[in-house]
Length: 58
Image (tube, rainbow, N blue to C red; front, side, top):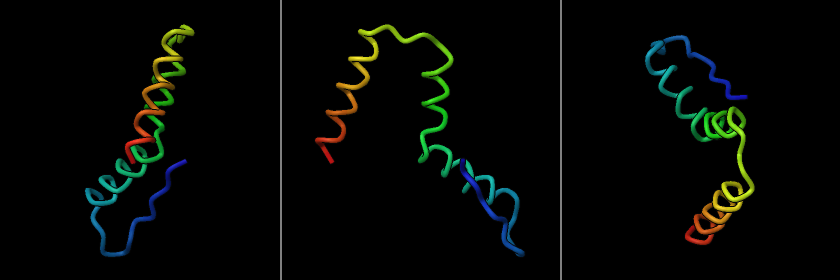
């Protein structure tokens, strides 16, 4: 779960921006999209292959 503590002199907009960044880094939305719809074995294989390719580049 992504958490952001708002500082005393910090605006809501900047805290919201930090929260959005934390959520995207944690991969919450991508997990949610994947869970909402059934994933066929072929789609699962393609997704994992793409993740492997991405991890090799880094």
